[in-house]
Length: 188
Image (cartoon, rainbow, N blue to C red; front, side, top):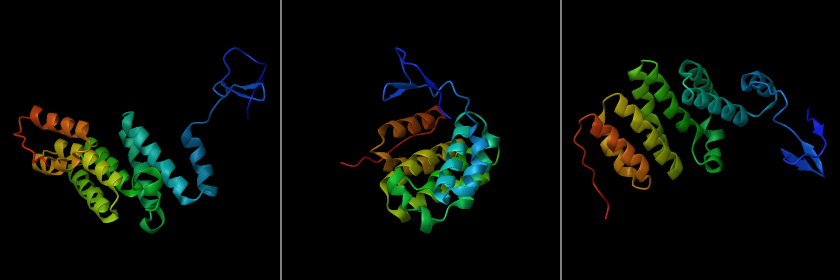
């Protein structure tokens, strides 16, 4: 429901001279709307909703709460149905979710599960042949390998990140701060 108010100096949005003030309205928490959307939405929308919730919880430090959403995303993910969305969103939802589940697993004290998840996104990205998925998978899984102490894997994989110099430099810095010798091959 939208509240209509008379004209003000700074409207939130204006349609035909009527101000719409959306920010003042009570909004349900995203988790409250998810069950209702699951009943009517196609799986791509539900999958995307769970993926966003999982990543949001992870980034805000609610790691235990992120894992069920990331796992639900993977349960809903069907490569035949959802890989085509990689072109629309810039990365494959399955590979992207595995990157974040890998990080969540490490943060929750499960390094073996984290490493198992970290292997799949890069392989999936090569199979898909989409650059956005590959670059994202290489960058995100590098953090899991660093956290788990697999520095050689990071060095080998970040050689492929020449387009993402910032991420490459960040990974290199993490290796150097841990006292690792870093050497990268450079393409001419």
